[in-house]
Length: 444
Image (tube, rainbow, N blue to C red; front, side, top):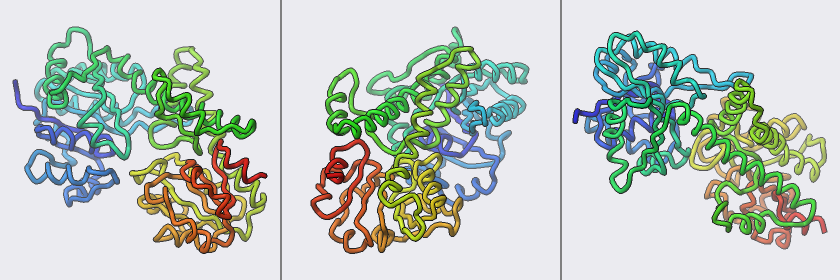
């Protein structure tokens, strides 16, 4: 057994969580990024993303010398037996993943390696990327083994996901016992109670990541369609969800109706899987439909608001609680709140927003076109409507009498159906959820 020395290329979300996680298990980890400003901030102890528990884990491992940050790729590669690529793979206009950063990083690793190296693809990449990277590194001065090890981290719970994973998917070539034994040693601390590693070929590992996210996104889109049907026929999506989810073959997760999914993974991965299908001349109809339904769902809240307040929202003040695509993150990428904001601005509304973590990122996009409340109730002051788009804990049981006094008009639009059981119509609110029977009571 040799010492575990790891280099992680890319200090973004996946790279930072993975690097700190490996250091937590006892490995010596060198995280590298081309963004020298980010490296400087990390060396000052500043964490560039909001992720519960991550800052403490980074600080702890930096202090004991197991985790460091640098922009010197060559030095970090030379000192490491495992090099993880965790660089971005943003979507192109056609839905395909932009792999330029992956290929450039692989080429740099190949030039820098002076000893046998396990090159691990942690970035989310389409089928065939492992094979293409093997071509890039095949003439390196030192032997390089290419392994696929996709991440399955949930934003808001990534530290727990890394240290207590459901599964660890590893794809390597048949007969590559060196890569297999090295990866087994690396992940051994996470498999003490049971073996969580699922061994497979690289293509299967690459596809597993995309299929998993597309399957979860599909459940969300399906329930959003069912929610629309519930509204038409007088059913309640809460009751339907519980009835369907009680089937052990289905389960309750990802069956919640809402304003559509967002984030850095689901939209991008669904589009990339659809593109992979087209390249292979397989039209993945359910995957395409999942994305189409989600695009439509992001217009549900704007449509409900305009149905209540009128198509022209000039002179109307609308408060929005929640800007991130989910709680416990500052990530606003593809957030349904952004689609809502765009639609309301186009209709002339004055918008006041609040979010515990997401407002700086939203301000960077919208500037002074929005008002930013330092406190949730302040956002609701004199509002003609309050819209809940992200189910942060602090929004889940507000002081409704206080809200009613603060608001100009007591209209609540609940994009997450969090308030649907509070009987708000009987408290004098006009309450609108998504696919629930409370909507019918407002119409009576």
